[in-house]
Image (cartoon, rainbow, N blue to C red; front, side):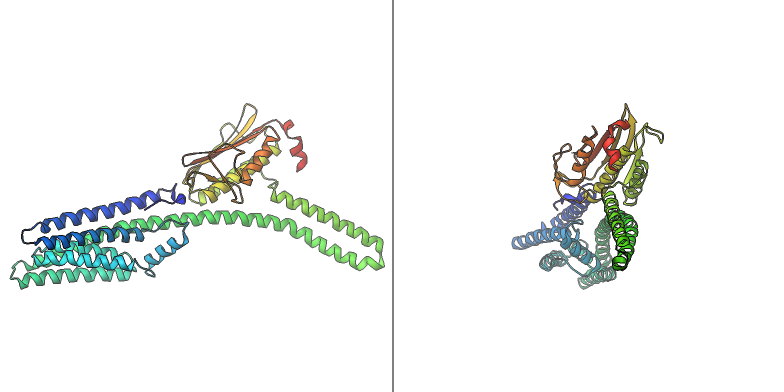
Length: 432
């Protein structure tokens, strides 16, 4: 039951450990107590006690292994995920060897007390194996197996009691049947809770992936709007220049110069889109980030502090902070398993500050960069290899700004600071 790095931040790995330890521990304690109650009987031969002890050990190990297989690892391991999905849907199954070994051990631990006329406790071990086996079946087959086991336990217990002349044969049949039903209810109930939590986590991951895909579609639409118009005009003017090449070379040359100008404009506009220079306000980026994170199931709070719509922050600074906001949002969605995020923006003492924090960091380091390449250890800006935040940090340095990011436990934070004076951005203003 080892944790994987990408399981941290949601509490699901802890819930998995809790479920496994609770089921394994409660089943083990119950088996030991019930077996001890009749294994210490004077009528049990010493060699039989050795066989009982071996069967008990095999059953406990089989239970631990089968439950470990039944509780799948979280997303990130395709093979584990496929196996877990197949188990839940009945397309796969448990390790056959351990299932057979556990079943034989349960049969031994059920046959011996039944032979000793222990009308109730003999059904404990078989009930455990029936319950665990049922968790690997489809719901319909699961119900059939449990119902069949209840009927068999009642019939077997009652038949043995009748054969021995016991007048309480009805109780001898009802008690083991109730034992099978109770054990199945406990085991299946806890595993059902795990399945619900696991499916919710898959839905959350899907929502985060869809949010990233929506952002990509938005970018593709922006690029199409720009390139579509330019390329259509270039195609028309190129066709016109081709027709005029012999009849009117002067006009054809003019048309080709226009084509060259349009191509240069298309290249410039494309670079503007790729570099994030589309005219949008920082407030829009913050609002969009909060909406996207919320759609991904992340509880997001936004604090504007002392910043207002009339603050003196110049337009170039708004664009740069918007880029930081966009990059930080992408990192939260793609490289963490966050449940909570916080966005704070204010303008104070002549500087604008943007702070974006989230929990759910994967393992001991944070993946950086909008394209997902490179890792950065827990450190301030400038020491990692991710291209996204590093390039933004260099950009902010050119206008006496700062961009820092660090990891504290499972929490990651990005802090950007820029001067609010428009005179600090002459190059930025001309670059647009």
